[in-house]
Length: 162
Image (cartoon, rainbow, N blue to C red; front, side, top):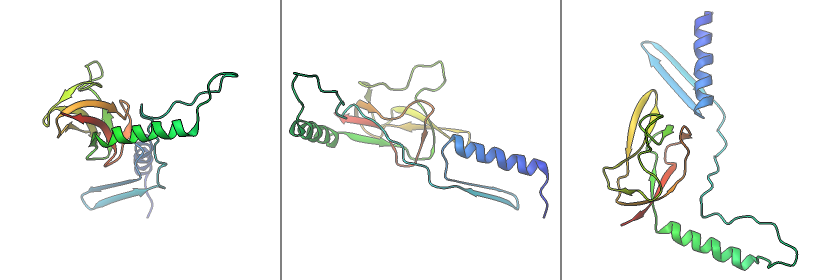
């Protein structure tokens, strides 16, 4: 069963789309045609929040940071995180913080949100999906960058409840 060049080009383009959006699996059904592409699991993305303790170089003759102080900071950060509500991605796609490239973002750190407040857009399969806060409070963290690929269940924002 020989495939013509246009089929191969189409499959190559689909593979490029998978790589660009960090997708692990892509299935397309059109009529009696079915294309299923899978690749190895993507490496988990590391998200750095403002709760992470800063790494500093010791200054000769200056005060030394002890392990106890670092543990205390981490304990306080974990306690603060427990008080926050996560807004997670309901789908796999590309995160956009604003309705268009030259528009202001839907929310910033410090923005007040209600359950029906749109906080971002996630593009999936060329469809723009508005994501709502589904909680009331103040945005305290934004964990993803504009244009970043996001996974299902990935935390996008952290909200301090009212």
